[in-house]
Image 1 (cartoon, one colour):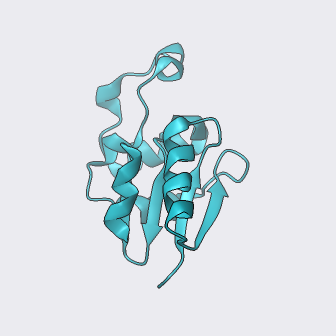
Image 2: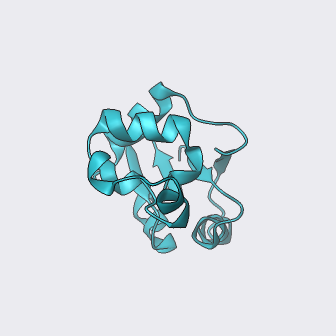
Amino acid sequence: MQRLRIYHNPGCSKSRRALELLRERNVGFDVVEYLKTPLDHAALERILELLPDPPANLVRKDKRFEELGLDPDAYATRETVIALLLEHPELMQRPIVLLGDRAVLARPSDKVLELL
C-alpha cells in the first residue's frame, strides 16, 4: 500500500486523532506540519483538485478568520482560497489526508479511514 500524507497541525485535536487512528492500524504515513513548512500554490492546487469538497470547505471560518475581518463569501473559488491560505496558512482546515489520487478532509477524524 502507498504511504499516506497527512497535513497536520499538532495543536488540533482532530488532526492528532487522525494520526492516532492511522497508528492503531499500522498504516504508513508521512506528516507535513504545514505551519512549519507552508504549502505552496501547487500543493494547495493539488489538494483542492483531489478533495471532493467545495474549495470553501478548506478554509476554517473560526475566531482567527473573524479577527482578520474576512468575508466568508469572498473565499469560494479555488484561486481565492489558495490566495488566502498562502497568506494565512493557519486558516487551513485540517487534517487533510492524501493517498495517491484521493484525499479527504478528516473532520471528523475517522473520515481518514475512507482512504484505507
